[in-house]
Image (tube, rainbow, N blue to C red; front, side, top):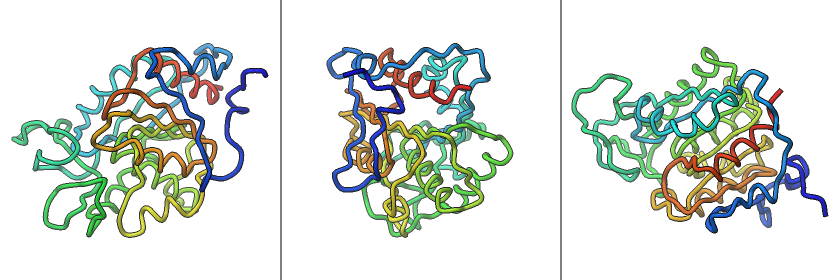
Length: 269
């Protein structure tokens, strides 16, 4: 049997019960991606793809740029990453998404921020608990809409953690006809999860999202367990899941770098 091309490798039909994304993993240290999915190498002679990158909770704009540095280097000539952090300053460094920086005075680009909060009285967020509110979500959606309008056009969206949940929600709203959110050509979700609260999860679960998607998550992620990322992955028709043995971060080692490049090559013009 011939090795499938990327278009042939996409699963047919909608997401739902029994849906299984195309899976790749690198726990053995072998480049299984290369053997399972071969694409002709496209020379970087065209303009790089532009990707809007949504930071995680309690990440600053500068910190997110630094944490995506290895990926930025890996995609040089193929993709331009435009980083965006949430609109809400997070004064309290304590919370479920890892230790934050010193909460003292700092330049705006170094201020830890979030997209929305899950409690009315505190600037905190939990991805795994049903929230009583989604405080600040409308401002978050407005921030993304403004970035798409003023900084775009973008070929794709990349989201990390809370930013991945927001990216999925933005695409669900766009697919439902929200004019603020034109559908991108592709989406990459790292340590993603279905957002909870006030019907957010239901918006994602109403039907399969039709745009090409790459879902990246770690087997040992203690912040966003892999089953949460798999649930989000199952909402995308023809989803591709890329697992790794690490935790809550954006992997950019050689095997993952190859996977990113081969996923993006199909969108090069």
